[in-house]
Length: 389
Ligand SMILES: [Fe+2]
Image 1 (cartoon, helix red, strand yellow):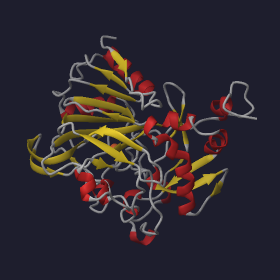
Image 2 (cartoon, helix red, strand yellow):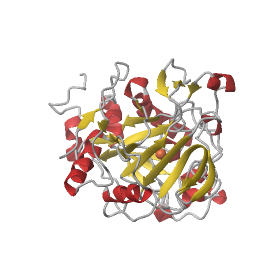
Image 3 (cartoon, helix red, strand yellow):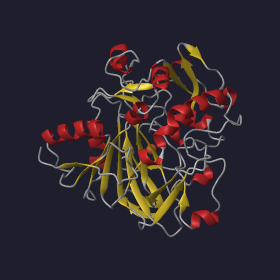
Image 4 (cartoon, helix red, strand yellow):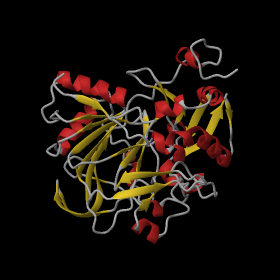
């Protein structure tokens, strides 16, 4: 290995951040086969790997590098073309680069003469278009913000979730500080850099569950809505960005494009990390239509969301959030099947941000956790110290 990898050292308030690593001396344009193998492992071990000083990386290199993480991939952007439907909650945030359409341009402000794009006005997603209750303009002006939407990058219909996402921060706004407010009846808040990307670990999300919820998670299957981003397009999010408020605003089957039952995705709640074999709790809460617990569908969306919130809310508590402090030229590779992430920030008209993002739908479904994998977590297992008799 010719590069140096340093685990992220979180500040004292981020006591639950046990993931993330930074590399400062690796050129992604000329990476050797041996170094790629090490980088591949590092992404699954550390979940989020930041390769600094990568400002020269081209869209073609980003695309090819992303593909190398999943050689069996089906060579289609993680959302296929479904996100381009104008009502989809994804379409408003990203646009493909004409020269390498698997790489998406995102950010804030006007971009000119950019890899085949003459001019484009970009808008950083703002919680005001997605949350039910929003901060006031005054609050945003004084630097208060929200997690926009906790998610993994995945179509969750027809296509399997990408294994990794690459997120390349070419240009960042001035590094003002902001406060993320949770506004969910707790006093939780988190100080972050303007325009940070926030990550939480699915492995930690599982590890911190009490015993009864670990066992329940193991018995739970997650059924995603067909055409989920259209389905949720009129609904609004909780103030934490972690799942939706239930107001009956989801589109009905009649309002959605044709549904092929074979394309509806049902995945286990727990997924296995292919390198570490660790267990990750991995659910995209906003897109879930039902939970099947011990073979029985819950069948009530409001109840489903309450159950999910109990599983997932602890994982986004301030101490567990890695809010990356972007520098221009940071090339972030993250384990999309092992972490959730969120856009953050209330950018002003004068702020400018230019990012490239790439992920590719996978031919493989996520790896389920087997009885044998789960055995060490059973209450009766001698190594399990979390169970209090
Ligand atoms: Fe994303």
